[in-house]
Image (cartoon, rainbow, N blue to C red; front, side, top):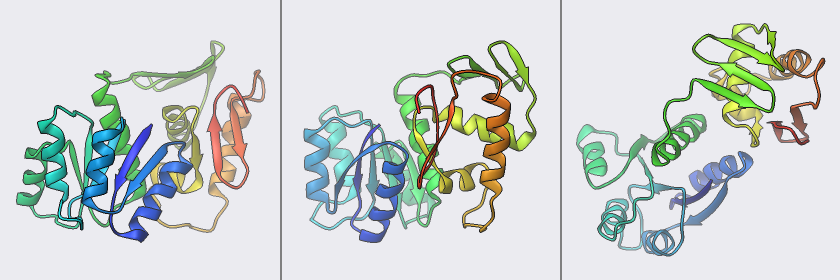
Length: 226
């Protein structure tokens, strides 16, 4: 996705932008309201991540209202340290599509962006995920490749589901720890390597071409090409 990040806190902006780029997204950045509104009005984005309070004389709410008045329907995820109900309601009623309070887990931000993108595309809830001849039936909890059933343990199933939902993208170790193991810290173990190895043995060992690839120093990618 092509994303716009409008955030004046340099540390937060660097953290979010780095994670999004690692996940394969293109990210434009603005550090104040005026620059954010200019980019949002002049460029086309799949979604906008917008801080609620911004310098430059234009805050997040003003940006949303200005965009909606011109018919701009780009999905907007509001980031804010203001977590009371009235502030969330104000942001959503101004035209925001979602509201995430600080501090937040990057995995949740990424998941909310995915949900906004699906909603914008009018996508219906997926019940089957597939890459090449690898198929996962979410309702029946069944996995197969080339029509051959593959038995997975619950954690392997969750890992493969996450990889399938991000097929073609580079998935970082941090994303896997947060979304598959619910860790928001590095446990300093080889738990990811062990499960990736087991999963690769089950979905790739007896089939061609290989689908699960290691991107050295970054993470993993599920797809036909290495």
